Image (cartoon, rainbow, N blue to C red; front, side):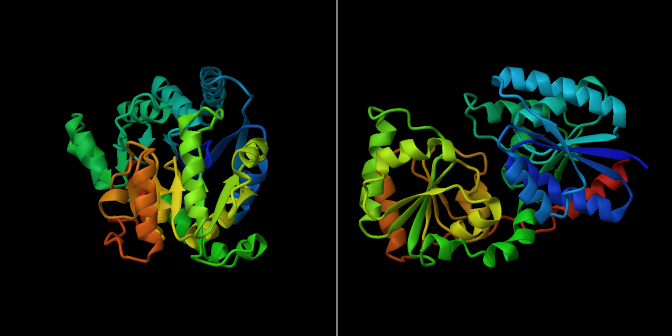
Length: 360
């Protein structure tokens, strides 16, 4: 039986490949191998997700040392070379735009193993972002380019990719959402946080706020004070920066700095939020499908469908814009954008599997 290796490192990548692994395994036409690179401290989240997908005994892990980004990628390339020599896969499927996905794509390309891009054509057009560079590299070496939204098709055509290599299948991460939303709905996390559904706002921060002189930190403090004056604000954060965030914002009445929930619990927190304020694009797709307004403090997004038809809005780091949009949402006025992008239906992994099984 021919083999296919699925690669993940960050949680977002795992959520793309996990449903595909299960479909391929159940079809029994290809032998899937799921490999996840884990940094120190990632084990608990990995174990919880693996259990949620029934993959606890299926997942092969690679430990990742605390290195620079370049050192991490180089170390992962050597690890994937050993794995590919051992397994001799017929396809390699990087799940995201993290270091492991980049390393696996480069090694597979050099070894003559066909590479599959699962979210091909997504572009933020900000090449200062490592993720954007990884997207470009991965698509450039991929044999099959699976596209999750229409912007990916347009971008790849404009970049000269042949039509027959572009395959519009939808977003496999939404398959994960569909699978896990029932568990999320049954979670007791809101009771433990003592919040009422749709009566709180969630703030998700990705970029560090470095000092009291950081303009973004000052802006965010003003925004949080304004929003927390009318509704509860939840600020989830990892253990390491929690104290600095409490020092910065802990005196704001109505704001709760909380530990970072697991993915399933986070889905519940996000689903019942009045809106989400964030500087990351990690949950853009899920929020659109769950019909939760999202204000993204960025200049661009690689998923424009979440803005064109979904619930996402780019507000950059503009205090006035953020507060104006927050006021409109909290007033209950309809935004008029509540559609789900085409083929974000929970069946994308099945479409990908059908194509891969015909291709080998």
